[in-house]
Length: 338
Image (cartoon, rainbow, N blue to C red; front, side):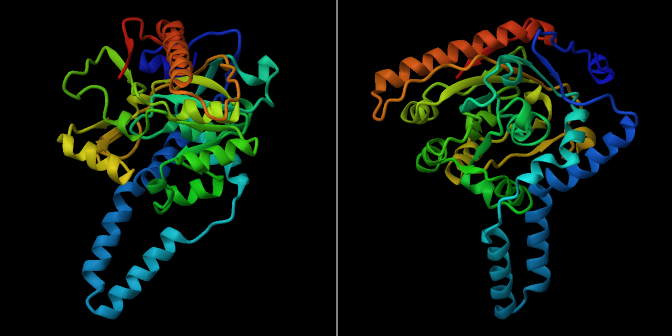
């Protein structure tokens, strides 16, 4: 068990099929310092990019010509097409982030199960305030060894965010639209997504009615990902990321911000991590990977067929959570489907 896991009071699951994310760090403090600095740049971009743009606009864009120039430059930064560069998935920075979280994968791992080349739709729960589950599925050592080089499905608004959006576009991320997802699956690509989407970010304590002893998965009524899988005949893989809901804390804002976030397809929330900064809390992340659920190809699935497969997925996810929760230190917790 890693020193980080012991310090956090969380037992890392032991399983027959287990992948150690990285070798022990010789200079863990330097690794942590590197992650802190890069978190301020990458995750902090959700704060400093709009704030910096606003300050620059107010201070320097005092004429109509300057305002037009500012708008043109901003549009170019947001909309400029970027060439796909898969090498970005192998950058050392992602391995350092994974080490920071003592990242591990357990369960039905493609490398051990002999189905490494099987196309699949990896469904990761929970989304988290920052989607580290999707991030590590698309980057780091897990991208190829666990998630079959799956490409992430992300909200369109995030794709056009400076910094984070640029990285996602270089990864070849897929827009969260039925047409784009089906096209990617029909090409034979494996994909990863958080089916709970933006709405799931707002669930969990301290939301009124939510208990600190429960984890929440926003799956009721979320049938689209199942329908896409059926249309292409692609296996669905449930994945629960233990610890992903604890990497940040958030302020419970009025309901209108959640509704506005869904309209804009980009979250509007106030969150913080270590020292009140956009630096994630150092909690172990354990990726519990379930068995692929075979999906028959049905070009036009009926609502009943979709609901039946959706129920099967939900049951497999809850079973996966219950199987590993005690070994993670969450024996008293329950997974609630909302």
